[in-house]
Image 1 (cartoon, rainbow, N blue to C red):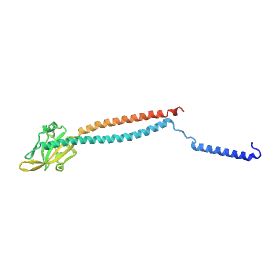
Image 2 (tube, rainbow, N blue to C red; image 1 turned 180 degrees about the vertical axis):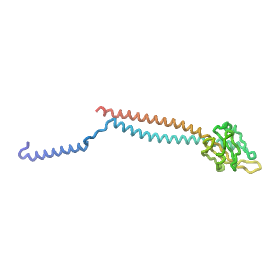
Image 3 (cartoon, one colour; image 1 turned 135 degrees about the horizontal axis):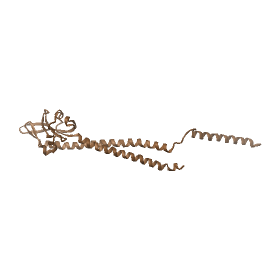
Image 4 (tube, one colour; image 1 turned 45 degrees about the vertical axis):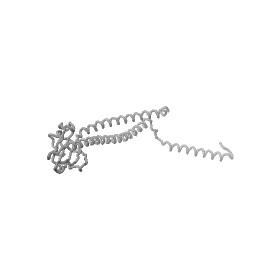
Length: 239
């Protein structure tokens, strides 16, 4: 108890102590509300796994799409380079005999003489009449080749061709002027086409290997994150 002159001082101290106690309890109540729970380690592990999984899907998926498109473009560029060589060979070996073009098929590529080989060659005149066709096109209609507009003189054009019974093709064509002794030069369009099936199969093999590899990388990343989480939280589990 406080007595005499010290009573007022003791009362002020008790009030100050009570006030400090109320403030402390108020701060504790604000810091932790009734019924609030601290997240468990298993919950944190699940959230981390979901976050890393989503990130891995977006990141690896983007890489896969970019690599897939780049490989497709490289396959097409390689096919166009081969078409360029064939077209230059056709132009170099071509001989105009009246209204027909003569070409030594076997000297260009043996696939030109094998029906349905996947490599086809055609030469047509300015009137779109077929002047020469490789043996690989025998027995197949050439409407898709005859109906095409001629490319600009001296330039090579590459595009996708619906070959009808020949299937989808990647074609290249070149329009040149063939000399005729004693007569005006004749405009002849040479067309060479490759079966796209072989290119699509090559892209398909690469695509399967690519996505299988990226899927394996994703699984390894998730497994590594799980192990890292257990190592980092080991001191917490001991509390």
